[in-house]
Image 1 (tube, rainbow, N blue to C red):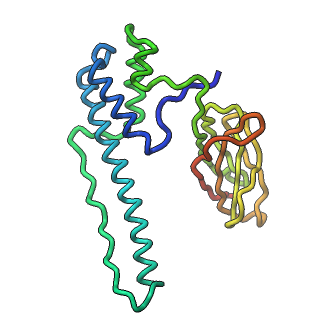
Image 2: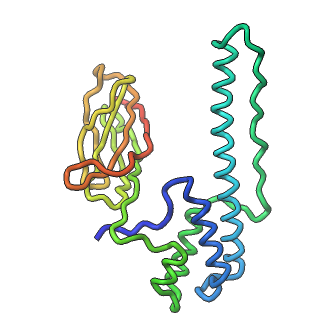
Image 3: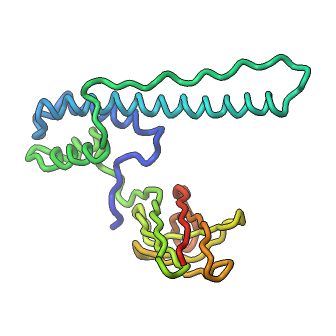
Length: 227
């Protein structure tokens, strides 16, 4: 059976998930082996997640405004009025209880909850810590050049898929599927475009079911070969 996945993989889903986890922990966390301090930290983490996601959204909106401003100033209508410069988002500040490492800490809290004698499936569903059986997550890649060759080793978090498709591009070209992997490690042995010369390569992955590519593409990772 495929692994069960319950922690959100999309940034936009994190605030709602942590808000619910906080609500449930505040109501029953201390009956599930969490300390009062841990319950308080869960609340702090929920607040921090919301602040960070809001800030990231504001930064992205600012980036788009800056691009539009740049286009208007450098390539716009010379007879138009000078546009106002975009206003950067306010500096992000946190409460005193804010701490980094929220996902890892949350997984630790979940382990405590699931280890409690009174834990049940219904509790897990209420907390949002039980994934649907066979649930599949977006694959993730980590790339590392193999010194002395043009090879690249890819470590794959398969997200519950049995088979993963691997794509590569370089030199501003198109994406090309270079293989599939049933294991957590895949080695790209594609020869260099110019023998003996380093080159930048980009990789992405996608799950496969019944020989068809399905689900979301992974985040693109890049690496420079070191032949």
